[in-house]
Length: 387
Length: 91
Image (cartoon, rainbow over all chains, first blue to last red; front, side, top):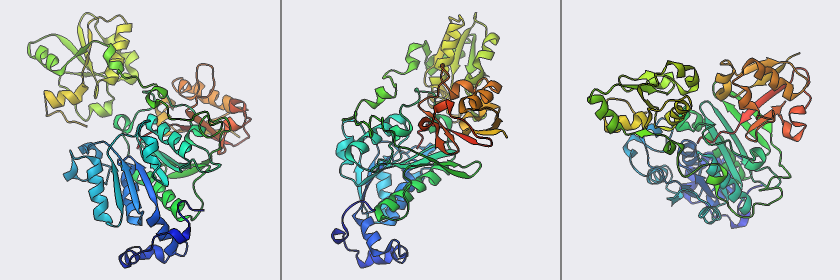
């Protein structure tokens, strides 16, 4: 089974294309028809980051005719350890532009459609409708549920992949009779429980591995070859280098693809429990400029770094002491409630939790350093490394 | 013969630094309770306050989803393997 148009309607290949794709054409399972199917295919990549990089590069190289990219982010130096679509010269550029330029250079036969936007409940159906299948390379739960529901509503296959640190997952959702993302995970974890790659890190090679599994599945679906990764969840463990598949079942009571209660897109931020105001707003805060001024003025205060020891090794604010949030309860008794205490982490979220713990323990003179060590590096001391 | 409980790396820290644990018990719930009993930090990551599985942490008994069997009451054969798969969203 392949998606897309019937064979007689497929576009012909030019002589240039025949030469370029010759290693495909001489595989009997792909052949001229498979390559024409790839040329006729309209594939939407959601995200041009870690997963999107190998997906975009290989789908373009394989000759997918129209490649849509949804992306609104800007290339950051910290992306380059894994996001191989973008180069050092692209830092500060829009990812969508750098991805388009790289793909055009790789294969000018590919039509790149740039959707410079975040995927939202307002635009998702209109964007996805124009494509044959979606490859999900997003980096948050809210967008994953959004992509899923939109694919279910429109009947589009969703080639899924996700990663964290050393582990990845991949499968193909939303095929006829197959399960969807909600069949696997009916509800997202509460916000903050599962760290993002920006918070928890990711082995740079891992999105390469998992993204290429997604690209492989997309090519198979388009060309109509092999056994798609439907009804099976592939688990990748880079540390033990083990690949395992577990069985995925369609849940008859799934509100998306089972009972079909979900008839339109919902508010996915709300569904994922994400509030507009960050939790950090609720605690007393100090700006980096205020902290710097107080320290220069000789103020007596305790500066506490609540990050993990491996982050402390990367860099720290001079004069701080380390008390990681993961074992903060044990460190509580070592603090002096008579002194002013300022807490910081990477960007302010974890230290806000630590401030709350101190408040609950009766501390009154305690502040969260706004923006954490990153803002300290930006505004006060550039010798402190950003990461 | 003991049963193997295989955790994702993200939960290893709460489980003494290792991902593979041998455990004894007649059901998936008992296996989880056995390992959680050894590592108090791990328990709340695997099951909620009522002792039930979370909708975002899935248990596979010999590669079959226990939600389509008897949940934590699913009987566990000797030498079986339980794999814990939490939702992750990185990309």
